[in-house]
Length: 59
Image (cartoon, rainbow, N blue to C red; front, side, top):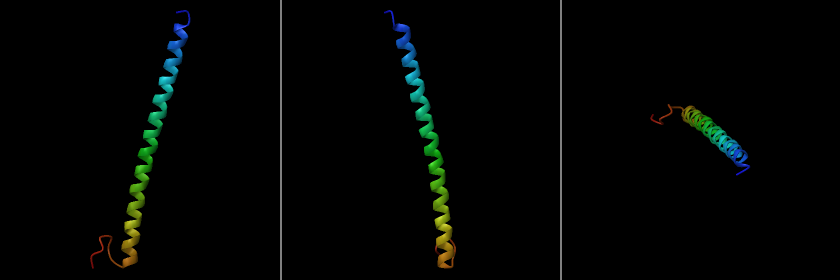
């Protein structure tokens, strides 16, 4: 019972670090998802230019 305050403090620090880590991962995932969508659009545009038509591939 003597070190209960220290146990609570360590627990709070660990949970705080875990939450920060999870939010960092979520932000990074959102950034990567946006980059992936941008790259998909760039590839679709490039394929449209390469085929001589629009991005949908119709002629």
